[in-house]
Length: 433
Image 1 (tube, rainbow, N blue to C red):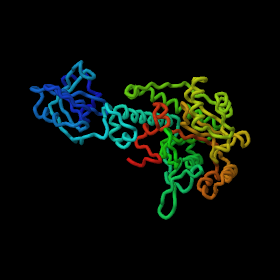
Image 2: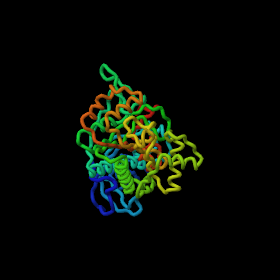
Image 3: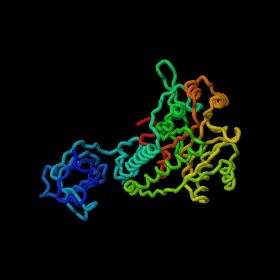
């Protein structure tokens, strides 16, 4: 139904016949001249109709158009320096494929603002806006760059179950579901399964996955359904090997985002691409926070206020928007986390980006006896993890991995709320559309 997208029509096609299809963005009637701005994924193109020149049936069709109707236009490309992009279409045929009802649920031209709830309730139309659709084109590019990086570094893409029999990481933040005649849960993460894969000899695996977490949050950075790149790798020396991969992956994603000039121009956004990522010990983080008036007791995880403050400190004092916090207290990390310096610290890390955690990971326990001990330490029943523990009985190499939140990467790159960078966000209040 088209020969070109609007962005492909240039003055160099002057005099050529083209067919374009899309939505009616604007209509202007100047009497003898009628203008229709057609919008498609390539951008905008002006259709100019003139009484006495344009066929009467085309003029009549324009008179009956409503905004956001879907149309198909056949015509000639005319070079016109006064038109957007220096080109317009002289229509010879205009077909209304689907007429839009009126009034519209929101204004795609953005002359009238809409609140976020109205936008999300009408997401199909919200994404017609060029700046909103640019968010998801950019997101697609970032995910493609992630896959490319991991493939080039010998990682194999896998897919693990999203319906599970027991908690992936312990805790109670689980969505229970009815699974025939028994209870099951939506997976919090692919953690246990990707660790089991380390016993197979595949060595390096990743998954672009979905997390389901029954947390009753009402913040700009939490959702109950989230997308992440989850990775696990075997035969590592320690957590530093895992951080090296994550650092290079994240820098590749940000570099790719910075190269998407068309999307960034529409979004009026410039992205800083760092050369490296700072690494700072948990104890040193507490010291920095104390020096800036925030006292956090040793052994506690960073709260939202502390994360925001640390982001400001790292930027001001180290010139870094990205930073690893390494060697957290073992007590606040999941049961499978490798101890470090006895049982006080762990070989774990979080990755912060402008004051928000976007990834966490570390080295895992590969010794069956220690792993079983840690499971019991968390008051979990080892019998519920028998399928997982079995993989550790027959040769498990040292391994580690991470989960990188794509939604949070997007929100921090673009400085938006997490709901704005997810197509159909799911939180405690929103289950539709």
